[in-house]
Image 1 (cartoon, rainbow, N blue to C red):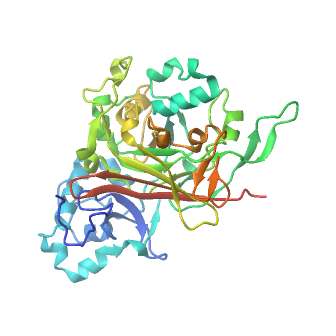
Image 2 (image 1 turned 30 degrees about the horizontal axis):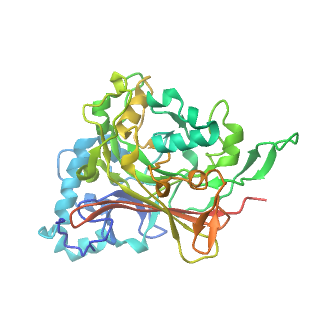
Image 3 (image 1 turned 180 degrees about the horizontal axis):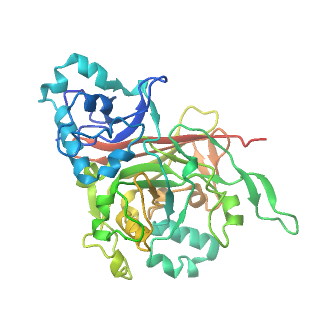
Length: 420
């Protein structure tokens, strides 16, 4: 059964003592941003905990990392500091520890009801890279656009394919997304279409948050890559399929992707996910030596996407997938990213790419679910091929433990009409 906190944490809560994900919040609009962890229906203010001298281990005792407006300084300290913080916080919040439990004044300052806070981007994101690591998604897209005889390009099975995204347009869950405008394929002899995207889509992804980076010119060994990953967030990498299809040859995605990417506010650490690690898919042909892991692991994270159609109160589940379907692991992605000497920095974000599963109801985007608009996806009394103005897309994710859940909360965004 689960660990016991002095706070009342419902068994269905995404944020039990086993989780303690990190975020950045404002307790009131006029307050400064500060780091916190989620516990049940509360946010524990880490600046208060730190100022009270309760982080007394060697890695954190003299650090001001929790008196910052983002988590980057904490990420830079590395795994010893992360483990020390987790151990300290699990003890402070446990049912048997009186330090916080029996100090009403400190408790009132440190614990803020979650429904009262404003969540912010938890990290300063210097760079953002988006991978293409789901074999099912790659195959479906290949069949759609190239035919089954050439569904997946040969290089895909040898390296984690990726492109550099736009860090400036990454936003926190709950931020509205304005429908992008751009060019689309010409019709006949006409000029290219220009106007609002007609094929706006979500992409069910997750993203790894980089901790300590590496020096320029010094790659990270794949078997040490986990020490450079702080944790994982849910990510919706919104995609304008028509804009992307016209622009991506020969250099890849650009305006069809850079208008907005939404992440969940809570970073679930690899330590919290460790009980849910599972064997990664067998890679055939075997990966090159620099990508060959002694133990190749994924995580059993249940993922779900719902759409609340414009003007309706209820949302409808459109897909259920799982992180474990990724062919290339996040540690392989990070190691490959640095093999040429590229330097990663604390707070960099590495998206997985769309996470599709093998079943028809586990596809990670409307492009696949509607097979590029050739069929409709039912949403209660209405249907969609692609997203319409006013639609809200909601991601959720969780791991099921014995008597507890380690969850990510939600990652949501609503589509607003294109600018005139």
